[in-house]
Length: 85
Image (cartoon, rainbow, N blue to C red; front, side, top):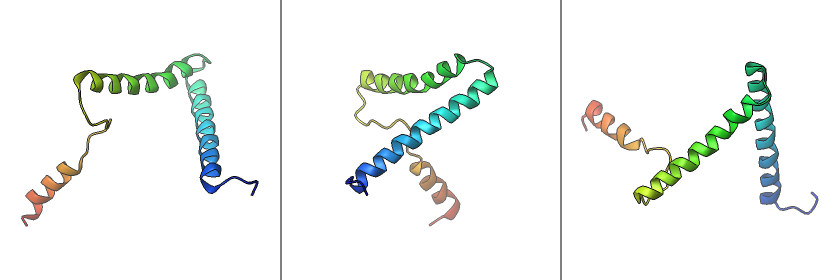
C-alpha cells in the first residue's frame, strides 16, 4: 500500500467509481439525445430536486431528514392481515 488507510483508499475508489458512473451516464444520454447540452440538464435536475425536497422539509419544520418513506410499516400491516398471528 502507499500509506493510505483502508478507509481513505475505499473513499478514493468510491469517488473514482462515482466519477466513472457519471461519465457513462453522460455518454449514454448524449447518444440518446444526440446533443452535448441536454445530458447536463438531465444530470443537474436530480441534485436540484433533492435540494428542493430538503428545503421543503425544512420549511415545513419536519424533524426527520429522510427523503424516502419507510415502507416497513406497510409490510408489517400487510403481513398481519395475511398471516393472522
